[in-house]
Image 1 (cartoon, one colour):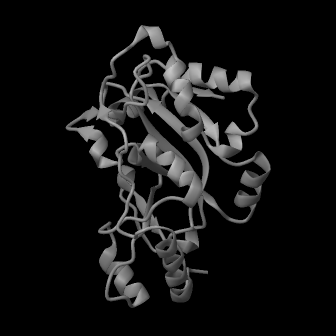
Image 2: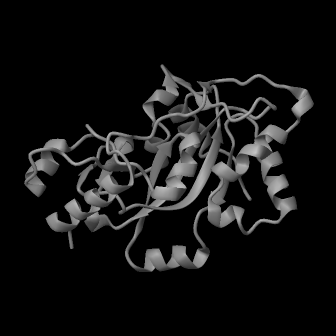
Length: 243
C-alpha cells in the first residue's frame, strides 16, 4: 500500500528533529582526480580513516588483522576498481527481500558515510518530481526527499559535484597513495513507499521519504579517468574485491 500522507509527514518530522533540514550531503574533504603520495606514510593514513568510512556492522566484526588488510586493500586499489563492504547481515538482507524490498542505488560522498551510518541518508530539497509530490500529498511546499536510482549506472553520476565535464572526481581520503574515492550505496526500499518515480532508461530514479531506505552495502570506487558510463557499458561493472 502506498505511503500515507500521515506517515509521509511523520517521517519528515523525525528528520527535522535529527538535523537542520537544510543540510544535504556535502563533501567534507578535498575533491579531485588525483592525490599526492607520501611514500613514508605507506597505507597508514588510509588505515586511520577506515573506521569512519566502514559500515559499523562490518568494522565491529573484523579482527585487528582484518582491519589492517581492509585498509591495505583500499590503499592498493587500481584505477576504476572497488571494494565492497556489507552494512547488514545476510540474515537481515534475506528478511528484507522476503518482505518485498527491492534493490536501488545511491551515489554519495565518502566523507558523508559516517553520518549516514548514524542518522541515515539525508533528504535533499529541490529534487525532481516536486510538483507531483505536492499534488499527491496536498502540501504547499515539497518535503525533502531521499533519491535513489534503479541502476548503478545512474547512481554513479551522482553527486553531480563529483564530475568535471566527463572527468570523474573523488574525495581525497589520504595522501599515502590511496586514489580519490567515491561511494555507491546498495540500498533496499519498499516499492509502494515511493513518493515519486521516473523511468527513463539509465536515468531512472525514485524518491522516498526519510527513513524508507535501508543501506545494504557500501562500495568504495577509486577514480577512473575513463568516463563511468562508457566504462560500465564497454567493460561491465568495475572489478570488485569483497572484504
